[in-house]
Image (tube, rainbow, N blue to C red):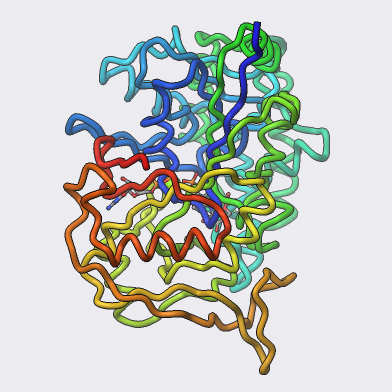
Length: 421
Ligand code: GDP
Ligand code: IMO
Ligand code: MG
């Protein structure tokens, strides 16, 4: 029998590209949907049939009854937040326990990891990363330090293991002189641990490889984006996991040879939440207009997203790092009313011009090219043949500059507002 493939859908900018929407749209074509990195720092929005869901830890393939969803070993999971998220889906009529498996190797985010996240950010002052406060950095640090707790640990002697790790964290928080109170949080968290025990906690690496041997196809759902990757992002203003194509293999336990298509998803403009360099950032009314029309406020934290034009220097780089085979362009409709559209084609500093990503993008100015806007409402369009010429020209320009075809376009938040070319 022909073996199945793992296709990857990866955010290739600073996150929030619309991954949730597209994973949900793609799910009917796959047998398994798997998250391989990140945790509740993610917020993936899915809108269909008048309903809206924002998923944090649960894969976006969860709405399709016959599909297996996996939270892989590369993820970190907060039992309390997982419970709240899962119960909301159960209340909406989705039977999760029959379709969601959690890796025993995924790491647990403790309430004290979240306190540490806040403490480290406070200590950094104006150099703070602007994290989501979900304990992501401390949990992945602990994983690397080989002192973390995994999902499998909740199955045996858990109270002792938990107490020991919590005591270590309390000592660090005490040394940092950081005031915190996790009493309420902890109650819910322990309830969440019990609730998680009612789910299949499995060897998801084995399950995935078995599924591939049976000819089944897997969609790996990225979280965050390449520019937030711990190795390839704008360090230190990044998240703490490998959000890139390599992370699919380590975060799921699948071999590089199983990878098929790599979908790189981006918006027709750029956004970033949190601190760090962002050469295309607009501080004027154009930026405000993009934020307002695009509703660019964080799905997890509610913070304003910083907005700017599309950055082709960054896109060329992230397409290369991930081996992107197809591009997906989201939220083109947000630019419907702009008379001119700009695109960043190079960076400039002290008279030097570069077209590839430097070691540090801080201090580099964006060099733009201007294209005419389409000034047409795209939101009701169903096929490429309806597109105005100026929009077709924008698509062709990006494809040429990025060196990769755009095969899917999204013209609104609803599942239906998706056009395959
Ligand atoms: P993710 O983290 O990559 O899944 O993306 P988020 O859900 O954080 O952010 C994407 C936002 O854009 C959500 O509010 C979506 O509902 C919305 N969205 C997705 N695609 C489109 C689109 O084509 N047009 C518009 N206007 N909104 C979109
Ligand atoms: P999705 O999956 C956008 C950002 C945070 C911060 C940095 C580190 O919805 O695209 P962390 O809490 O991970 O330690 O924060 O990364 N960040 C995201 N930005 N979308 C996300 O996820 C993000 N997850 C983390 O704002 O700058
Ligand atoms: Mg998001």
